[in-house]
Image (cartoon, rainbow, N blue to C red):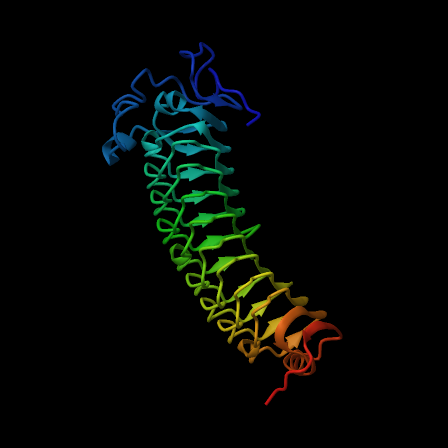
Amino acid sequence: MGKGSGPGGLFDSAGSSDGGAAASSGGMAPGGTGGAPGGTGGSAGTPTELDCATARPSSGSLYLQHQIEVDDLPLISEVQGDLELGEGVNRLQRLGCLRHVTGSVDIRYTRTLSTLEGLERLESIGASLTIESNDALASVTGLQGLKTVGGALTIDSNLRLADLGGLENLTTVRAGGVRIENSPALVSLAGLRNLTATGAVELKYNPGLKNLQGLEGLSQLATLLVSDNANLENLEGLPALATIYQDLTIGSNPVLTSLDGLSALQAIEQSLIISNNPELTRIDGLSSLERIHYRLEITYNPKLPTCEAEELRERTGVPRADLIDNDDAATCP
């Protein structure tokens, strides 16, 4: 991943045994082979509250590529920097006292990590959270203490991940928004049901999703992109979404038949793009939409009556509209 591991970072200038966690700057004193004084050993279960009373902050980023680097850590209450978990990491219990990371958390390219158990006390991440290309990851259980992410939340190419259970206490994803893509086993977004504040949502290449249930807490977004979801039937799951400050894009969803689920949407401040949805037959799910500020593009939806697109153009007063290759022969009530 481009960052080496070895002694330093958490440890003092005298160094530590080979295989210690690499970090970008100085930090905690050695915790010995078993961790911090009074703590549980590296191979033990999640530390208790009593154990965590001895935990201390790390003053540098941690780049952990191998399990021995995790097991050799002293007990840590906060990472003052980034936390990166890579290829050889397979269990996280040694991080069981961690409550805050001031930078980013990246969990990428692990081969045998199947769960995020061990991170139950983690409450906040100052920058982004990325969970990407983890071959065995079947659950994000372990993140149930997480409430805020300061940057983007990215969940990408985790081939066995079926749901987002474990994220139920997440309420805020600030800059960057939520991006979920290339997740073939993902069938539910219900783990995000308490998310009320984020900038953008992007859902792409998730063939198991049939609807968007789990996003009920969102009332406004900067952008919403829903694209290339092979079995998405409708957009149910967004009953509170009233305003999109930039763009709404719905494209290349091969079995999407309606836009049901967007009945609360009243304003789009930039563009609405609906394109290449071969089974889309109606857009009356946008019945409350009163304003599109910049552009309307409804193109290449062969079963969608052109007259429905024209009615939307007239109702919203959009200054620029491209209505191309929809069903010109169909009639509207």
